[in-house]
Image 1 (cartoon, rainbow, N blue to C red):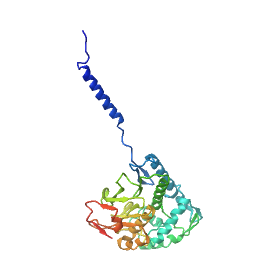
Image 2: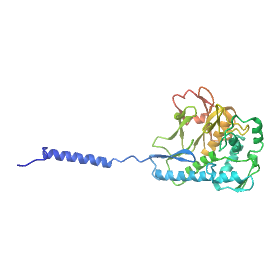
Image 3: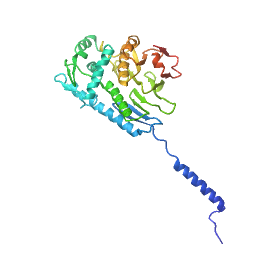
Image 4: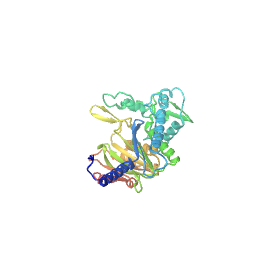
Length: 357
């Protein structure tokens, strides 16, 4: 007697085997889609790199490595949060001796001087002593808002006039002078990473660092690169719209309340008005698109300092830049230049709250 281990006719068994082979073949041929973006931390900020679907020259890992290296180099050079950075040493010793600047340091300070002039002093990297008095950069927040006498005395001993840059060297002319350029250095590092990737032939990529972004090419055929635009009143995860960026325009935002201290029952911004020595209060945020994110960030900070009325007068000094500003107002409202609105798509909830600036 023959014992059969399977009662299915041989022809059905062959069909099942063929089907199973086809299934296994399809599984083997199914690959996980390639990663197109990666998030990490750099220069005390969230960072993101992405490559477009058509990018063939540079793998995502290489884009990430190049950007991270550029950011780390700048952090070690020009951040006060790196204790042994060149900037930290400048702030310690430049009031008694001339200090050398790196190539990047010289360029960042040169840009800071240019933007100081273009913003009529609203962008100023010498407010560090005032930030310290208000409780930032390692200072202790005062028990009550600083009085006018102390602020006037401090303002008289700090400012751009007390910084002398001669070639690749820097010296302070007042013992109270300190500088803080990390925000500008961060966007300058982003611009450098963008240029380095472009020069190596990368055609479709996006770089984000903090509230700044640059991109080249497109995300996919027919799909441009866009970035979410949050609002300080609504939180990081509730976008008020999206902004389209391309090869010709970088994007940067400055939020007054990104870093705050609480004095009494009020929050105070780390962004200091260099004219008064007091934290800004009338503006919540500004966003700027421009030829570089370094320039866009400098103008955005100046707009936060000056507010909508005074800030509008600065825009002719920045050809190629467009802007949007969020004053402190209820309900939430925005003012944007026509050029900014060409690339900004507001969310449905904000569509009727954006006015021409």
